[in-house]
Length: 296
Image 1: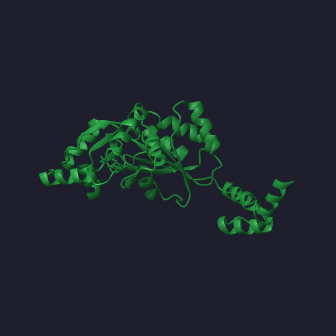
Image 2: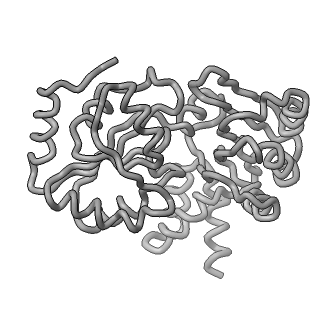
Image 3: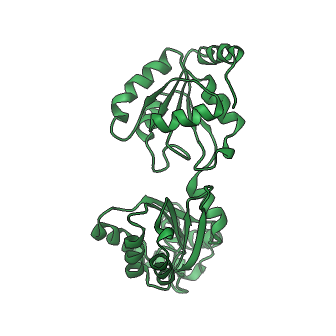
């Protein structure tokens, strides 16, 4: 096990007070496999004044593993606005702080947005320490189109609200990505079958980087059968990725529509249609006709 030497503690003090204002470090941590700890992550956690942790118990386990003894305080969904002022005071006094979530990259379906937003508004320094992120890791091995994707985070817990959300993106042509929990994965797939159709391709990445990591690739109907047949496949943490809807040949993408409308505010319609066609690949004639309809 690594340990923090007196030299490292001295370095921490130097890092904490090296600037007039402290720095908030947004630190990504492993999503399962502790082999994903980076040297930069460890160095940062060892040398800040304090660590704002979603769950101090889990963070202390990680710190113990990497030989770091930096003090932690809780920072989660239920207290982040109350703790915001405390963190600002630390930074203004010259102390640097690391923000970590239970696993992965903070702010990605985890606490931290109000804090980072406030610090940006105050022109205070925020630095990313990149590392693991479940949605990026899952997408990189899914075999689905990755040039465009939308991330919806966790879907609503109630079926009616969840179904409504899914229906609203049923015609989205980009890959859709969701996080889901073990006790809702089956009902989530059931609602996807209703919203997207039972033959839509879906990939489930379960327990990424952990001992029982599995990636299931099938139609929605096929995945429902698999999970019903094997209860173990419903356990753990899930990233659910849905292939985008097929774009109709005579239908413009939302991106084309939005760009064409914006460009037409400054350019002739034909020129706006030409640029939009080059950007997104939709037919120039369709875009031009769309702009004519919009202006009539």
